[in-house]
Structures are given as C-alpha cells and as structure tokens.
Image (tube, rainbow, N blue to C red):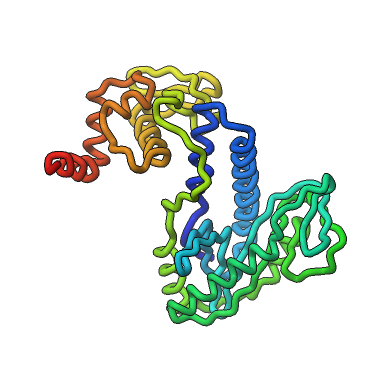
Length: 304
C-alpha cells in the first residue's frame, strides 16, 4: 500500500475550529462544526482499518477535484492495477430508516441520501479520469463506520459496508504481489496534483478580524489560556508545550486560513498572537517564512 495523500482537515473544518475558539458561533454554525469533527473522526477510524489491512494499491485521502466548474470531494480513493475504489465514509449514529428513496432518522429528520452523493462523485471522477485518458472501473463503497448506526427498511445493497463488515471487505480486496503499473502511479499523481487544498465553499460564516478573540489557540484543547517563557509556550488548560517559534508559526497559518486575502503584516500577527511576543520576533519569523509573499505585497503598494 502506498499512501500518496494523507488525510487533513478541510478548510471548512479549520475555519470553524478557529471561530469556535475565538467567538460565540451561532447554533447552526456550531452544529456544522460538530459535524465536521465527527466526520473527521470517522474518516480517521477508517484510515486505521486501512493501515491494519494494508491493501494493495495507492491511497489518496480528502481529494477536492473539479469537473467543468463543479467541485466534488472524495473521502478516500484506492487505486489498484485494474480498478478504483471510491469510499464515502459516514459517521452516523442512531437508528435510520430508508423510505421514499431517502434516509430518515427516528425523529423524522431527513438526511442527504449517501447513494446519490456517491453516484455524483463517481460520475464526476469517471469523467475526470476519462479526460486524463484512463478507463479503470470504479467501485463505489459507502462505509458506515460507527458501530452504533442501525439502518432498516432497505434491501441488501452491495454498496453499503457497515462497521462490523469493514475488515472483511478490506481483506477481500484483490491482493496482488506484482508491482503497480506505471499508468496507475501516473494517474494517482495527476489526481493529487489536481487536488484543490485551498477550496473555500460559499457557505462559510461571516467574520471580521476585529471581532475575534486574539491569542494563541492550543492545538489540543483549543483553549486560549496560556503562558510563555523565554523559549516556550504552555497551554495552562491542558499542559501542551511547544517553542514560541512553533506557536507563532502555527498562529500565522491559522490567520492565513481565516483571512487568505489579508496581507501578512507584523502588526496584524502581533495583534493576532495576543501582543505577547515582540514585534521584532514576529518580523523575523515572517521575513524568514513568507519573504516572497511580503515582497509581492511591498512591490504592489510601491507601484500604487
């Protein structure tokens, strides 16, 4: 098994994660954030099963691709010498019923039909691969990863794999001792190249710099309670420790996710970090890691 693209949190997940720590999210946005956390946990659990089984092929996780201006996302893709396995991972809990071509919770709440979701992704993936000159068979699989999920009133469906069936499914995948074909490696690298890691959906919440809490967010417990020494940052809520440089660099990355169109300046990052580090310290880190971006901005403003 070759893990060509590891799993990372989506832009939506990272934005909501930051906003949840820095402002009072509306209930609807908080629910979206909770769903992002739950979904990511389910995907990581799926990854664990993959690493335990170690299937033959190339794995790409969290792909965001585009077909004719339409963006579609893939949880996991396994490319073998003769097939592509497209996995949609659902971390639903509780009891659901299938009726009228839809999924309903016991409460009557209707959710998106994962069969339609994966059919859409498989269709777009087929067309992207065809455009690249590949005609591999696509096997769509919906994985209900949570053992507390129950589904009733649905005839057996070979697209569905439940938690207690996942190990058997992965073990039954074609096992090949021969090397991967060059074409498959080429396809995997092209798909990875086409991945849009900066994709931002239109439904992100509205927020502005001045209204967000400032300070260093702990990457473990997401608290903004911290203290610093000459060398290190400490989270006083959970005890997490890192160097001051690491804390500043992490905060700069968070700022760039939240405000991709704002220019990086020493003053902004000084304020963003809670004004606990010197401007000189921040300026040195910005100059070292973002010199090209800062130079482009300086050139732009000098020309204006």
